[in-house]
Image (cartoon, rainbow, N blue to C red):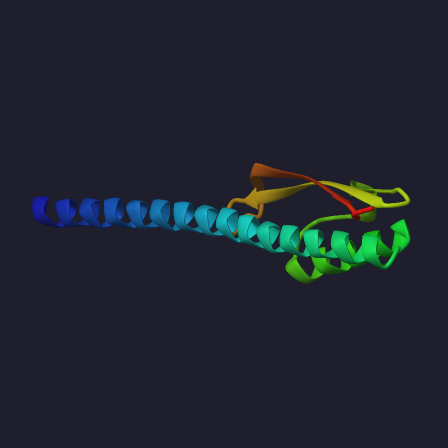
Length: 125
């Protein structure tokens, strides 16, 4: 009976370690995915700033473009989290949002990653 109890204990320990490994892998994956999507969003943000200044796009149109891109990337960004300041030859965009990193299967927040971006562009005079 001692051998079977020892074998069961080893299986339980292995199962616990597999669950812990899955948990950390999922959290890492969620964090990396959020960071990569944010990087792609920032690249798009810089592109939009340049186009918006050169084509003199209104602030609400710039905001809409950024919200659409955020939706495509699965980022929880609302238009009220985007501040667009338009000058005659400049444009400043500030974006602040948070992404929740969830516990696998339960979908409860365990960590919140905060992203803050401030992009300014001035057209040469």
